[in-house]
Length: 237
Ligand code: UDP
Picture 1: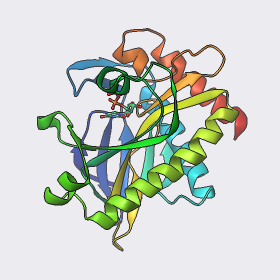
Picture 2 (picture 1 turned 90 degrees about the vertical axis):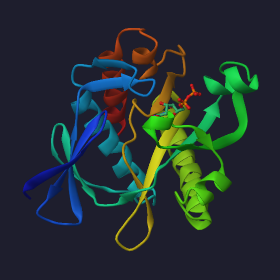
Picture 3 (picture 1 turned 135 degrees about the vertical axis):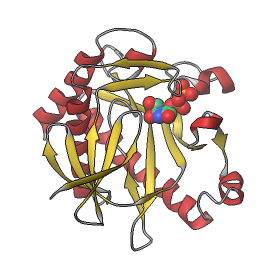
């Protein structure tokens, strides 16, 4: 497989074409950003760690019957993925109240939700990724109602599988963000990445944060937290 022209450079990854038009080549970077790019930094080995963690999650989800864009790892910080047309909607699923649920809606920090909450955000840097609902998605033509239903259902299925899986590693899956794309057959396919950059993970015993909130909140030990997630995953898989 040959790496071709770069198609896109995002905050955490670069995407290249390959000699197969249906396959893209992803390079995971060590760059870290938060608050829509307002806070910038580098986390040593983040590219390598997120590439490995995300690949393990995607493989596990596939085994559990949740298809996704992951094909294979090609180096410590690179993977091949199936080409999809990304839907510009971020799907957030929450199990435990923190962040905006506390600030905006008055939930208690750390409160377990009686059932998961699914939220949609418009993936648009210029607008700061605003919160949107299904009507906005339809009128903005980001996705049709059937696709929204698919994203919601797949988001909840990922949540069920990932939450149970992380519990076995002694980790609470607080919340996470997913992205989906449309593949060449028109199917809504789970895409992007699943990693401590895109999930909140709390240690069950100590409640210690093992995710990007360590970077967002300047808590230190960011690399160590990501290493800990990988260590627990590798011990289980
Ligand atoms: N998230 C993400 N990328 C984003 C926004 C959110 O990966 O652009 C993840 C984040 O890591 C967390 C979840 O989605 O696990 C909810 O994040 P949000 O920013 O909505 O949190 P809150 O507003 O509640 O603090």
